[in-house]
Image (cartoon, rainbow, N blue to C red; front, side, top):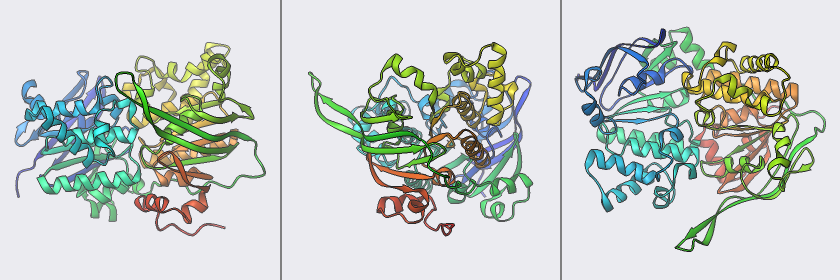
Length: 533
């Protein structure tokens, strides 16, 4: 048998006196995919970042990391730069913080081609367009000229994948590469990675919390718990006969069943009619408007107290834009009423008092949390702004209670966002929204960064909070398993328009539109259990 492409032996990582990874060993061979799985905070991403030596200087790293026989822990900076983005490609978990906001995405991909292949000019532009098309972006020529903030979360993630595979790496480290992708594009990206692996013999280290994906893409799996390897082996054996209790618990973790139906006729919290968000397309010296991108085009919404409206659709379908428009965070046309009061015409100070009643949990927790603020300052910011705590002690008690509700220790309020894993940061974002006890909460992919067990905990928490406080949720997600567990009503968007809407049970079990059926098939929802009476 040939020597491993990557061999990690006895890896240990500390941050100060706190161990993050302890005695981790594994190997990846050419043409093989090894999945590194575990709960949020288990050390998956720290292990991945240790390989190309991308950890901060505050980390202490011990152990051996060999790539093609060379010890990366002893390699000089110049040689490492030659490998990063070249022979070793990496897809990071949070694309918005990995992409430069000041440059078009096409230029950023072209930079990798120039550094490692010397490719420039028209040849580089052709290669960029080809890469964007390969990862499933529509209109790749136009997307290459877009800035990161002009793309959806899923589109940004696809740009990251295009950049990572641009130089045909021997090893691809993929840290949650499909987290922000809808189910159909997720299937396309997995197929793309499989094709690249088969064509070039590329080795893949695939880091994920989604065990459904592990079954589809991996040859072997390595299970981490609290920084240690608790089980490793072929996927078929580990999934069929898991030996460690932690592995069995991961495999058993699934979102809870569908929510109970609403009782009576609850109060309408949000009502919108004919909501439209059109972005002008301007060209030429005089910036004349030649057309519009119809991100949201004539959408109606009605959401009642204690009810969850699930909004699903492919990346770029207008889900997040609709959510921002309903919260008056994006300019729109159409009628929007909150608790019976029209808010579509309100601006500035007139709208500010209503902000407490409508909160949002954003898709990218790292980008929405101020890195210079402690967790206590982040969660307590709304309390200060709306003057909801008379004293500092009362504010601190509310902050601690909110953190405990989302599964974080109150002591963590003194730490900063960079000290948490991606899933832990998302829980901080949820605590920040819920601490104000709003009537309407917009949840934009709140579980996408969380492992299955924490997803189940968060869903249970959201349902409990909704029951106790009669909260209305607008739940935007590409994970239809999670949507099924939370949504009472379902709205399916495509190209900014509603293709299907109705009670979640009816839409999930008896979809009428071909596009809806395609979404459900890609998400393994094509064979659902019978609808309960």
